[in-house]
Image (cartoon, rainbow over all chains, first blue to last red; front, side):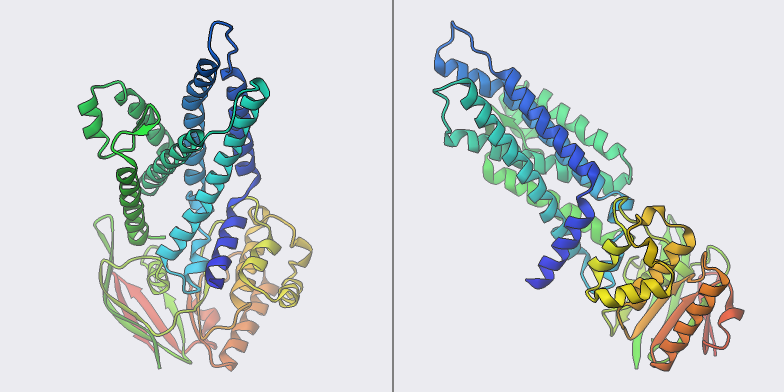
Length: 233
Length: 197
């Protein structure tokens, strides 16, 4: 356990830079303004419709920003400059897998905290604008799904980062995310087939279910681990 | 005692054979210099020993897990300072300060590593390597950027390691400087290693 805490501390210090804090702050601020702008108090709407409209309008943008933040963190953390300290840990006897997995734990914790703050903002803005707006489990469930899809595109970005070793990894991953949004407009059966390889969320539900999504994440993580173990540092 | 053994090790980079079925052993209490022209694979051999580069063929057997290492080049995140880096990887603050003072880096301890000069960066890498006592030290071009005074200090440290019967491996372009400290020479030519005593 002490070994794990030691390496997590190193990752934390190496990753938390002014740039990262800036990216997270921009992300949180964007979420806040999106929440504010998404709330439309239309007199012809029922209270249920107002709240549903608030959720629908903010959801896509918050998901998009969270995915961008996740991809930026993964891409930046595994750039040559920010990942080269691995040699000092490997010389201490840590395996590459241990190094990579522990670093991913730290990154996921950062993304989790970021989404938690975004969620709090969603609730706070809702409460501030509407007296009848209450915390509901379904909101938490929706943010959990945003967390899962953010991890997926983060892993995808790491995969491309390891392959092409360039900032273009971020652009490729983001393009794939845009493609996934287009795929959502296709026929259900097509979505279901394509959804076997990527995680798709339609109307707040995973196209192929939660377990399939976790399976895809595990596969992508394993692929990243394999590449990291095989590549030259 | 054999610390590291390379058996039929080959390494290819983009279909180019850099290391070709190399066999050699690093024995404890010996000192080795690795020589060879630019691009012959000195750094690759060191990285293979360190486990930073995977071999295309062959086996690397290690009887030792912790190795003192001085890389030829490495990078750090922009925000990491000298003291943050050393404190992360070593616990004894007093020892860190002593080394920083000895190498003239104490007044630069709050400087970002990315802002250090080449010589200062090399001194930092030497300090990092010396802070923890190991049985085997591997150094890749350790004199890079060092001034005459620092080179003298470096050799006194090598002498000290030898007195403690540590094993030292150095890759260099200047074997004549190391003559009196090292007893074995590994010469890399056309992907092969020739060993001279």
